[in-house]
Amino acid sequence: MIAAFLFQVALATPAEEIAYTTTEDGYELGFSHYDNPGKPPVVLVHGISCNHRFYDLEPEQSLALSLWDAGFDVWNLDLRGHGLSLKGKKGRQRPSSVDVYGEQDLPAAFAYVQQRTGAEKLHYVGHSMGGMVLAIYLATHPEPPLASAVVLASPLDLRDPDPLIGAVLHNTWVGTILPSLPTPFGAKLVGRLGTKSPLQIDQLLYNPELMERGVQQRSMRQIVAPVWRGESRQFGLAKDGDFRSADGTDIYRERLSEIKVPMLFIAGRADRIVHPDRVLAYYEAVGSADKEWIVASRANGFAGDYGHLDYALATAAKTEIFPRVIEWLQNHP
Image (cartoon, rainbow, N blue to C red; front, side, top):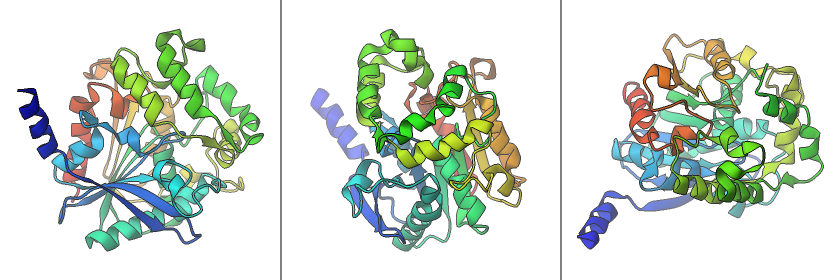
């Protein structure tokens, strides 16, 4: 019985291809690719201090595989300095800013996916910093090759944050002392301690009521990447409330009024890292007439109030978040 079940799971799970492309400034970016020939391509981009495994932790908890099963060609990207991209050309060189992800990494990734698939348009899903990177790209590429996009917990206005996050924004200079912050070590400690972690940091990252204990532990071991000095420096500019370019001159939410890409925004009521109001500012800044705003909360019919990592890792995400993402992409071919 068990052997038959495992055989069926193996048949239902596509082979994973590891692919690389090179940016204009010479970095090699890694993808985890689930091939679905002739189907619409979708690029997934992780958040800060994460890698592509956020979307593909295990077969039973995988937005990537759910998208593949729904008929999408799935390209799960690691930005430079993260995951698979650490193994590529110049992979150990530190990202100089968040801007380079939007100005260099996304153009290279989109061009490569278009070349590999022959598709004129593609879809995009970004979590946290992954959605902010999209804003940088949209602000600098007025005619993006995007059929649609989904933004999960991505802020552009950081006013009135959770007190702990506010303290982090005002002390990002700490993250500029070292080449990177050792967040993978800290995450493993949080995963082991759980609700016993100092300051209950686990509740800053996710809603423990929504995520299985085993998933909590595995995610802390497998999805966490360093926070790079260039990221800390640029996020430090946001302590006045606005997410800005690395040189401080551009406020990205002020450059999105002409964007017409259909976009779905999802925020979590219990997200202490990115309060829904911070995501709402992104939603309001985008000029598209075809956009939707969802708050994942018990009051809105969800299993509970979603935290920052719950959009892909909560048990209920498979039935509450994934279908909404899939439906949005399918409705915008």
